Length: 95
Ligand code: TYC
Image 1 (cartoon, rainbow, N blue to C red):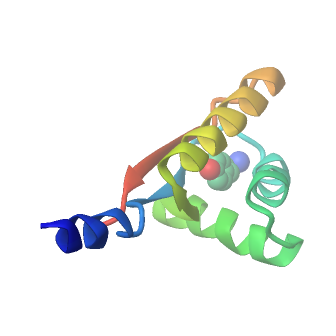
Image 2: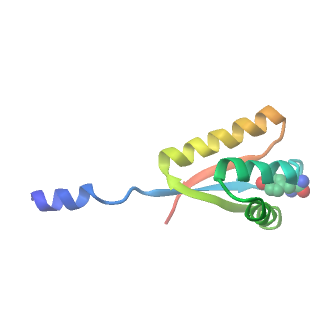
């Protein structure tokens, strides 16, 4: 039925959360700057997220469409690689 197809079409896209993972080597300051730069957080918020990762092992840095989340992961991993840090970042569907 046409009406059902229309309803399907306007479903919001599945959102994906980008998580950053803790490690023992990446400097805290580097993580704060990365969160500020790629996840558009102010310094205070970025610092809180970094500390949560440090204490809990991981934390959500942002929630995006699948494509944007994948781009964020790429940007973080590229910045980490360029700087020689082992920082890890993943994205996963929410719910
Ligand atoms: N645990 C790191 C340290 O003590 C800091 C850190 C925080 C590393 C968050 C990664 O995603 C991370 N230097």
